[in-house]
Image (cartoon, rainbow, N blue to C red; front, side):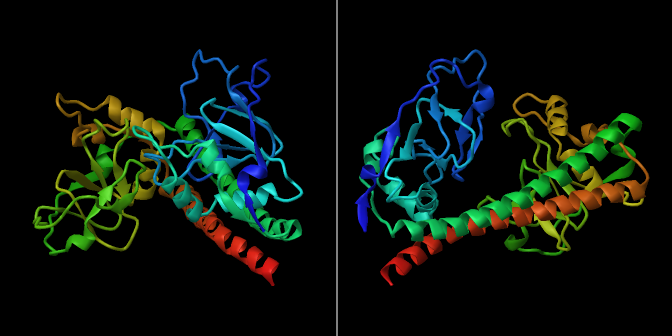
Amino acid sequence: MKYKLGSLISLSDIKNSDNTYDLSNLKGISIKKVFIETKADMKDVSLHNYLVVQPDAFAYVTITSRNGEKITIAHNNGGDTYIVSSSYVVFSVTASDILDSDYLYMYFNRPEFDRYSRFNSWGSAREAFSWDDMCDIEIDIPPLPIQKKYAAVYNSMLANQRGYENGLEDLKLTCDAYIERLRREMPYTAIGAYIEQGEERNTLNLGADSVRGLSTSKEIIPTKANLDGVSLGSYKLMKPGQIAYVADTSRRGDKISLALNNTDKTYLVSSISTVFQTNAKKLLPAYLKMFFSRSEFDRYARFHSWGSAREAFNWDDMQEVKIPIPDIGVQQSIVNIYTAYLTRREINEKLKAQIKDICPILLKGSLEEAGA
């Protein structure tokens, strides 16, 4: 049957007026439709006007402009109570004999809903999907037992993914513990004696499909540059096992753009990039990349960047970086754990994408079963 969503949900305006909840309960919401730790600076901010999100309630941000064509919404499907900014909208399902909240979350978790909410957002400076717009949604709902059946399938997949994710964090903690132990117990050595700059240009005549960029998340990414009519002769080769970075650290969010080519392909990077390799018998490139991936290195590189119009972390600065360099066997052991972590992290991201993609399929299946 079709219903106006507004007849099945109700607005919640419970505030943290008595400061029952503190910063440990404060959450933000991501465009991935989950609650996250807030990124706001909460120093000296009073929480008494923050909205309370009780278990089984929803919260969303009405503003949809500049939001990646998505709406930021989440369902509190745990047992804890959260608080969110008063600029959010909090609501819950009141007609629980007609609509299951987990089923509604699947409805929200589809790209079709992102498109709908974005299309029906209004405003001048900022476009918003208001509470009235939310209530005006017409939703086709199967009988409650069917809703619960398909929601259970979704929740089972989600529980498996989260269990996998918890194991993933255990790997990360193990790897971090190894590094922290080395930092405490071993002397630090400048890496300059173990690295060598590479200056090979595009002598292989590689084309634009081989050009790559370097991200601040320390990954090789497809280039964002417009290469129409651009000569690639001056571009640098980035061979397997080599590391490349962009010396300019200004206007990069206090991070350095850097990546390791851990593939068997040779890429091209901009001539402004610095490419180098390690003496792999003494220093594994993957081990070095682990240290480059730490937030401490970003802070170090930014602090040691110099210049006027643009600040740069140049090659001389890079050679001065000091890290613990243990026996190559120890390095390999740590790299193996870190590689396993990266592989599992990639699998986890694919699992999350598959679970999100299955929401439209489950909803379609539930409606077809109801009509059978």
